[in-house]
Image (cartoon, rainbow, N blue to C red):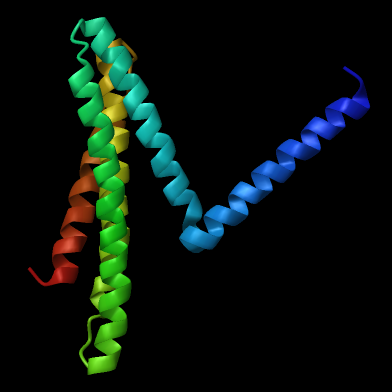
Length: 157
């Protein structure tokens, strides 16, 4: 391949990547990369789950289908949580009630699901035979409890 052809391909890839980043930023805002990370973790968890099932000889197409449905459900819950935060915050301003704490619903939900996806990936990798540091698993458990605790504080429980 000639240098000119390689440069044209590289330019197209850069243009495509730039378009994707701009699109994600327009939809998800400044922290679009967190949503992109969640999508990547969804995909990696699904793939490692399939590999784990093959190794454990527990493959089941219904479980795979339910995994996809569940992951779609996560995105729906995240969308609802962010919508609640936005809508209730705006509504609270209109009616003179402080509902600003609801803005954290989306972020806490996303954080919870991110942690859960990472933990699931690590669990799959352990079953596959990959050595995962115990401190990483324990650290994610602490992170999950901290996010849950923060959510309870913000909601007033």
